Image (cartoon, rainbow, N blue to C red; front, top):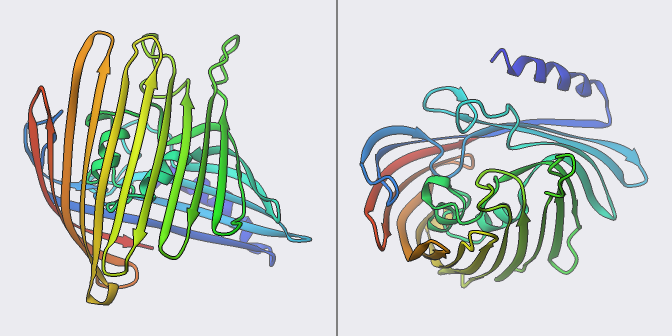
Length: 335
């Protein structure tokens, strides 16, 4: 809390402006159960944080500048609700989720700072389990380090400049460039994502090229990822499907994933069944080809507009190694 007070003191003066709106928000997500994955097959009984979404808190605000132009900021940090510790892991930066400022208008939004990786955001929107790094088969395989981490780099990028368009015929475009800031080295990241979100059909295509961040090394100095996904809402059932391709230099670590799933609404939309499966196939210069199958089934029920209860079973197996099963139940509260 002592670390949080200086940040709050910086934000409070904005509240004095009649033209400024400041919001404090976040999510507390906790679950209990048995967890095991193919890469960590030894089962653990635990109370943990971040089942359906990683717990976080945030501050955001806008100021009307006139002529339809607005200044805005976004400051967000992760925390572990089971222990009360800051960050997703020990030593993580205080505002690792987002810390940026920008201008918005008829042209869209331009902002700078630490900004969520747009491909990670997109991947969290095109699968039944959302952005869950623990329970979503797709996210678990391509973004969770202990799960495989087919997409290198973090879910948020520092030193970023991002442009996000306003919707045009239900279609948006996001481009992001992040500077590695190493003298004499051209090790910058870029990302581009286009999304069409209609009443029934949603389509996403995107690509990222990563040259700095977690997972990069002399053996893997650069990686490019492509993602294509679609969903269709039949009302009685919503279908999801996606394909991703991951290509790394030097190590020739190449992978691709195929993902499919569906949700079925219940109780007038208050609840939903969630089912998903993903296969990641990977090979490298010195590693034989293998594949990883991850499947999950669960139920999520909204007991109020801000609180939901969930239960999930997940199966995880690497073809040339071990397997793990996860059984958890949890609660998520938005504030």
